[in-house]
Amino acid sequence: MSTAQGARARARMEITAAIKDEARRQLAGEGAAKLSLRAVARELGMVSSALYRYFPSRDDLLTALIIDAYDSLGETAEAAHDAVADAGPLRRWTAVCEAVRGWALAHPHEYALIYGSPVPGYTAPEATIPAASRVGLLLVGIVRDAHEKDGLTGPALPAELRGEAERMAVDLAPALPPEVVAALVAAWAQLYGLVGFELFGQFNRVVEDREPFFRHAVTRLAHGVGLDR
Amino acid sequence: MSTAQGARARARMEITAAIKDEARRQLAGEGAAKLSLRAVARELGMVSSALYRYFPSRDDLLTALIIDAYDSLGETAEAAHDAVADAGPLRRWTAVCEAVRGWALAHPHEYALIYGSPVPGYTAPEATIPAASRVGLLLVGIVRDAHEKDGLTGPALPAELRGEAERMAVDLAPALPPEVVAALVAAWAQLYGLVGFELFGQFNRVVEDREPFFRHAVTRLAHGVGLDR
DNA sequence: GTCTATAACGAGATAGAC
DNA sequence: GTCTATCTCGTTATAGAC
Image 1: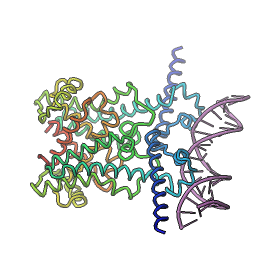
Image 2: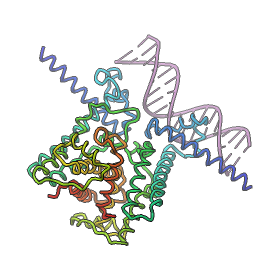
Image 3: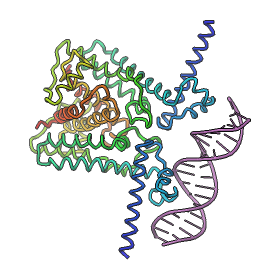
Image 4: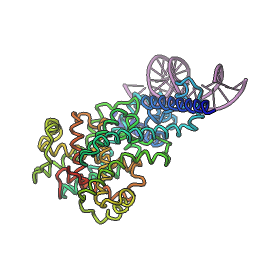
């Protein structure tokens, strides 16, 4: 009966994918706050209760969309990184950053879903953490490689931050000096500041030619973490 | 009839304020996407048509809330700046950055309204620009003062960015070198990356002791713009 | 076991008659 | 300004088809 099982499983996957595709379409139109199981079902010619075979609740559908978005972004960033895996750390760093920006511009509503305002009444479950970590892990890996090869030093930490920086280093990258870890986490957040400002319109009438501006900014972010070539 | 007119004008202002207060409460509960004139009216014991005498549409109410939020943030930042107006540029810079973070933590939903995901179906009118510019102008002023006193130099611009950086300098701060303007605009965006990551939960399980982390990060942002004391 | 359809609930929004 | 009839929503219970 493996054929029948395969067919059933395939049908289930296809319907699951169709539900998520339609949900993504609604995300673009109305925003995550108004995502509605009934509207998704209606658009697919199903009845709303049938959706519960695939997603136990509206929040579970949202969670699936969030994980998919993080994974899509992560895959894009990893592919861009792998394409220049043999280059120096600075080149790998900028490749990842530019991939993040490119993905965000190509998927603005999914970017808003994962890095924009929280959806009212929804809190992301732990299950989103691995997917959400992929880009960060990629950046950590680049910096770790650079450190193993050349040894990186960061700017001196103020006393009030030393303990926290050491704790972060233990959690995120035990091989790296705490100064570098603190700089890396800050650069990670700052990268999304640049992307978000472009995507959400804050650069309108301010930065016109965004690509070279972004490239320069993330190159300087890399310098701040100690990567210089 | 100036008394009656004054009373009328005062009543109108009071009701306008009450409408905005209730709308802000709903912002916190349901998010900007679901802001509804009817619900605001109901909560105030009015009928929805009465609200249209104060705000011609839901979008106009949203615009008023956005301008108020930018102004509240701007005032907070300006007050924090003025309190250390006699100090060096670095101190003034960090004071403004910390005020932005403090305001954001105190008003998360209003922060989400102005710096989070765009509200579906709403585009901000030009009228929001002056209020939206206040923090940026403050930062420009600090850097301009530092440049007039000591002369700032930025990292060399790549050829592909030179033209755009010169254009930005003309628009934003003609007194500053293009290198510094590019660095300043990037730092401005990066500041909001740090704030947004903390506010929207991206730092959960990553950065625990956020205040010293933030202070250190914005100090290094200032260094990147050329401020060093 | 796996799925879809019907019907219903309680809550909220909406449109229009009055 | 008020009231009512009619929508939407998430969700569940139930019954039946494959």
